[in-house]
Length: 331
Image (cartoon, rainbow, N blue to C red; front, side, top):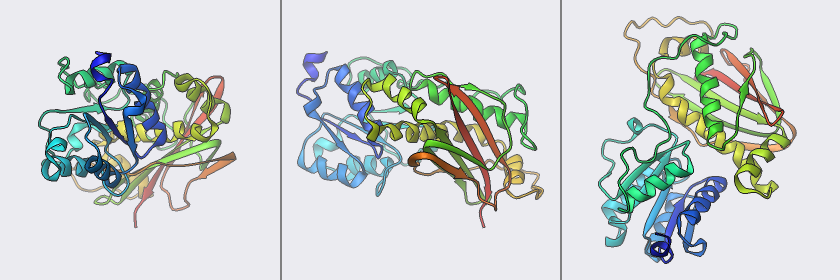
């Protein structure tokens, strides 16, 4: 298999340098040559590269600056050159396929890989899209949405234990992406967290005037340990990317899990207002791009206009990281 792929050109499109590096590393293990793997950090750059170079495989994140992965796929399939129209394409996202646009051209050769994914999951997806071996589930490492979570976690203030458990389970699941274990502590109310590496992502529902902001705060040692477990030698310029991508994965995993909590989320975000619509429609959150910062004892502080806040500590590599969840109203 490796010999067949040595001369194949691959384009990896991702706004996260960390994620692009992780995918590139997996591709070389699969058999592609490092010098034949190109990277682009936005959809416009990807289009330009496809006009200059023929590729045998394209992988793309959904959330990109300037032009997202959905638009990129549509443009390549509908308006690209003949080679680009038939190039195997792998769409990578932390979101469920139910979030895909109805007009997305998913005819083969196409595959969807959901984060968090294992190396074996990526290999299965590559085999599928390249026609080397069929794969029934496209390599996704996540199960389909199941029943509502059981009441097994203590509530934090006025935040129901069902909701608390979703945030805890999702964070632990995201850590599994990097073969790291996160053990949750007792959830609590609070307004701020600190860390040497901070990353946040927001989920917004404009119709319901609700925004969730999820922020991870890492001490330096824990972030370095996670990075070291993936790449070996530590590159401090890239370590913050680990935390940023974890926040992105948490946001993507949690998005479909919270659709049925419209009443609870509305009342948490809107400072005690009562949701009166008996129909209780599903939430339709839009996932934003992750933001990150680093520096000794950086701080994330909840807005004074927030409804409820939730802080959950997690132990990993004998260090404590924190997840801050803010339920915000949109004016």
